[in-house]
Amino acid sequence: MNSATKIVISASRRTDIPAFYLPWFMARVEQGFFEVLNPFNRQVSTLAASPDRVDTVVFWSKNFGPFLDGGFGETLQQKGYHLFFNFTVNSAAPLLEPKVPPLEVRLEQLRELCSRFGPRAVNWRFDPICFYTAADGTIENNLADFSRIASAAARCGVERCITSFMDDYAKIRRRIALKPGFSFLYPDLTDQRQTVLKMAEELAEKEMALFLCCEKELLDSLPAGSGIRGSSCIPTDFLMELYGGNLSIKKDSGQRVTSGCGCKVSVDIGSYQSQPCHHSCLFCYANPAAV
Image (cartoon, rainbow, N blue to C red; front, side, top):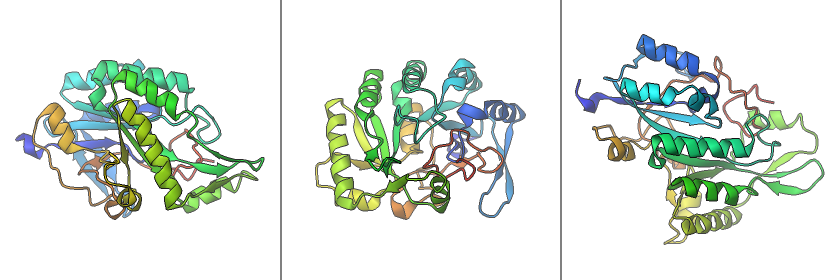
């Protein structure tokens, strides 16, 4: 089959497959197909998953430990798949992300990912930026460990940091209602601009670039020469630079294009309902069960 017809699999925006669902994923690879549930109309389609149909698998995770320990990446490469990684590493504090591994463990996973698969195949996502009022009334954010993570990522050779500010969803409001005294704060455009410009300045010193995910208004407000760009977390143009081939560079119309999403077309194989994420992050938009 002509390489132009190959697709990119997103695994996954909807759940954390590398942390929790690798046996399912590998079983489907062996069977040669995925059954994909559309979360909006509930229709199920069948997606051929053999290497002659799939060019690259883009994995999203907050815990690549099971993936690395099981050698799943090497197995997939031997089968003929290309791999790309969106690794979210935010903070050492457990308040917002109570069930992710300790930060030092995640930083070692980042080092190992870059060592095994190359730093250009790894996006570091610091996502989302959160401001909040803690139970004791103090105003906090999750940026305290940003410099530490940035330094570790730079030592690994990572070139791209992707970020956004937390969005307000009803399921998030229901979740934090169970935590008396806690509330998320939503900085205005001026505060957002100051935050990302400071982040970009620090990253530039480490030869890293900052990208904004679904933040069109903020991006448009930035001064010329800031060096901050819009993100494409499924970057098929960059994947072709890495691996060759001839993939579609059309934007994914199923994503938040009007908000600034630059993702190119892919097929997301995860499920919000049947594959719930167990990290229990307070700001999670995907998992209504996370409390």
